[in-house]
Image (cartoon, rainbow, N blue to C red; front, side, top):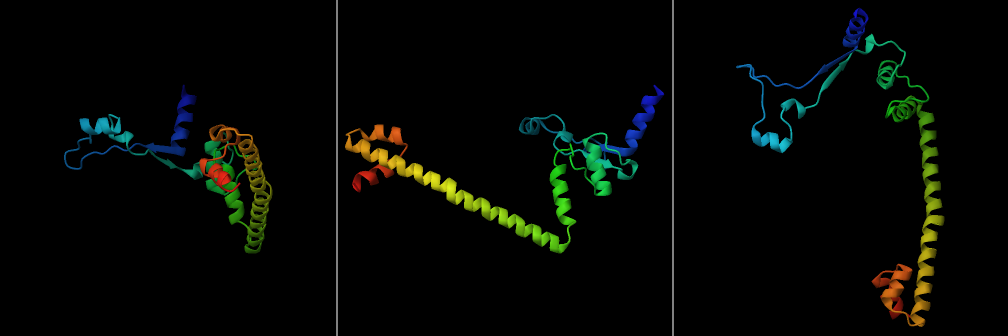
Length: 175
């Protein structure tokens, strides 16, 4: 029993939690929601509408991470993040921290590298993705033209090719 109390006391020294309760300064009454507000906000209690606050005493944490909260606290305390963090969002924080710790020349080189990757991706998309879409459209127009020549109905051609009314109308007018 005593072991649990010691453990609990240790946790209190590390993290403190506060819920929002509003108490009147003059008459010490607790703020309550009226019936209309309860329906509007779908809750009975005012504290459900306001965030909880946590005070974290970072200096009381040792540098050994036992869970994801400890990983975040270690980051806040020491500006260090393991290579494979488990805490949500911590990998992105690590990447940002690594970037901010770079020397100015390294940061410029990194930015240039990122821009190069972006340009390569854009060139790939323009060459292969957009070219593929244009090729598919051209093929659909060829099929539509042959279908028109065979006397198929326009609605049937639309279903087969996926062309729009405007595209088919333009094809019919320009053949």
